[in-house]
Length: 435
Ligand SMILES: Cc1cc2nc3c(=O)[nH]c(=O)nc-3n(C[C@H](O)[C@H](O)[C@H](O)COP(=O)(O)OP(=O)(O)OC[C@H]3O[C@@H](n4cnc5c(N)ncnc54)[C@H](O)[C@@H]3O)c2cc1C
Image 1 (cartoon, rainbow, N blue to C red):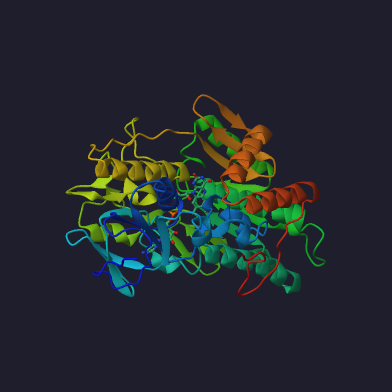
Image 2 (cartoon, rainbow, N blue to C red):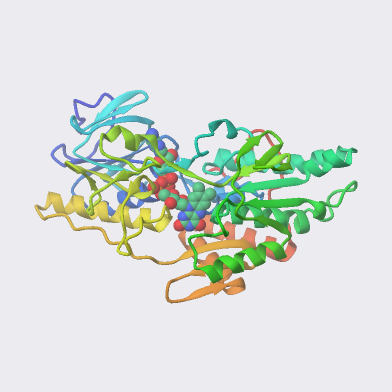
């Protein structure tokens, strides 16, 4: 049993010390798939994350919209890697990277690495208006999802007691800012909740009268999809009763109020689904970053001047074969994670690094029950077929057989009964299925 003397954090290692130490920051899609891809490598892997769970972010809006519970879309990283003998997991927050010393500064210590994979992801950005954050929460973590769920359900509960028509209308007005996949998913799910799931639950108002407004600064929703799919998504949203306002950049957000120039909306619930900022760790590497804080990386996923440091996933900025920047999606992170792991094994074997090439497996967004759009390049789908493809891909990619089974049952139940499974309002909504 050997411990690196230079690390101040105790790390029980069962591998010989001469094996290189690979530290991975982040147990999201990029970091987790990198760790798994190193399972047969002659290295010691330490995965650091400030949370103890891997989160399946594509289904986060289902937790926010009371359709799934947190435990159904998250699994402890330690549990996922339990059979991987060369890997250890540490709950730790990295505050700074010092590539010159091959050193990580943690909130409570420091560690040293031979190879480093930085996969600390991104979060939402408020276009320089951080003061909008409390009025309009974004969706990135389980805590965010539970807070959004709490606000949405509370608005309906308060509307039941409100006698003033104008105040009740404000309580029943929900504004989603940002017409990308997350905004579209949230607006569609909100409309379904109001018009179907809650239809018979209240006595003093009709939940179907709720106003759901999707606000987008650009000319259309789902801007990264081909135009026919973007238009189909808009049609489906309108069919669900969502008011879609495009070409309407938001100029001010405050509690209960959204302004788009002279246009003012009174809304008790405002949700943020626009803008991305990379993890601040990227800026500590001392190499160039783009406006969103993403690190400009070499084609082999390393940073300039440091062949032992890889940056992957949402934190990385890399141009694809089509000349456009690779998107911040799970597949990019997963493929980069596997590629970085391969390059590290090449380096140990004395082989040169291979450049990364992204294989686009398709782009999907769901709009509501039995409605989605999917772009596979060679095939474009919309409506029920696209939704079935979306369902299949998301079930198959969930980590853990139990989660897949539970989610499938929940969805089948919701599909046939129009019911949302977890309409509970709690300050500290507990995971119903903690392991
Ligand atoms: C609501 C939502 C819906 C989405 N839907 C889709 C979709 O349908 N399809 C799709 O392909 N993509 C979707 N995405 C995007 C996709 O989830 C991301 O592209 C992907 O998660 C990026 O993976 P990553 O490993 O780079 O980062 P992440 O998965 O975000 O993981 C980063 C990890 O790093 C940890 N971390 C961060 N900072 C530190 C630190 N300082 N110290 C220690 N640990 C740290 C975090 O806790 C986290 O576990 C969605 C994203 C969101 C937010």
